Length: 186
Image (cartoon, rainbow, N blue to C red; front, side, top):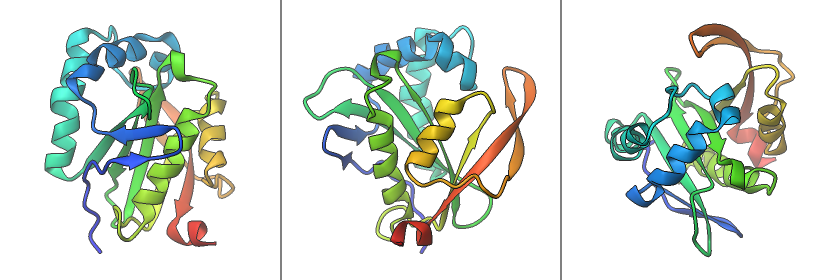
């Protein structure tokens, strides 16, 4: 099955995941100006309201139109501000995709991203969802929260796979974890 990237609306016990909207622009701007988010996510600096408008109005829709990636905004079921964003990006290797995310500082420590990541990985690996065979998670050593998040939903870093990423103009080594469709079935 060919994976089709669509912003499917996903729900969990506490969350609704859907495409970001104009109402999310202030929260995107605030979250992406946060020092901890800036430290680990390759974002423009300074991150301006115009950066957030571009993210919501151009970047996210382009991912759907190009069928290369999907971005979900996380909100509580009862509504309120955007808690974070989660992206699934098709890799060059057929059947494989990479994930990335960020949380607003007001949302950290409540398990929202773990809950959202579990829903998105299930959808991404489901043959009736995005249909990928394997998902990849990269983290830069030092970002232990990223590794713990990925491991909490089943990503395996035991193989010791490494890659390089560019973060704020510097080439850094990153560790790669994988989660395969067969891993989830078990």
